[in-house]
Length: 194
Image (cartoon, rainbow, N blue to C red):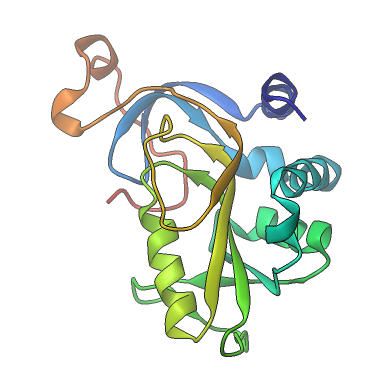
């Protein structure tokens, strides 16, 4: 699936939004990808996961024991990646502000994990989720996401793959352009800004 086909899936789902948005990272943007909308259709979610799994190098795919994703945004794509890779998929969540395993989920010592996100902007959530996996004894051997919103700026110490990379500009609160600042920012996602 190429970038145009991926964006076509987002447009068909009404998931590519324009306006003034406050991102979970605390940054502002004139564009927002509502991954929950693009993933609400199981067939579309499955197609996107298969395309993302196909981008992973074969040697990485063959080593994955389990998929882990951060709640809430990563749960659906994580589940579909588990299906595409034919491994179990679980998630970490933040009941008290720090990612942890719950609901009877566990990670065996040394288990090789693929971290799966919907969108990566700064990489903060991924790093926090990786820490939870490592604290549980797992080893994260790769990260992937539907969308890399970092403009290619995010770096991890392990391989990272995204289905599509977008370079919509984002702005710190004190850098918001005057035109964008004229419109009140809305927070369409589920997390409070950082």
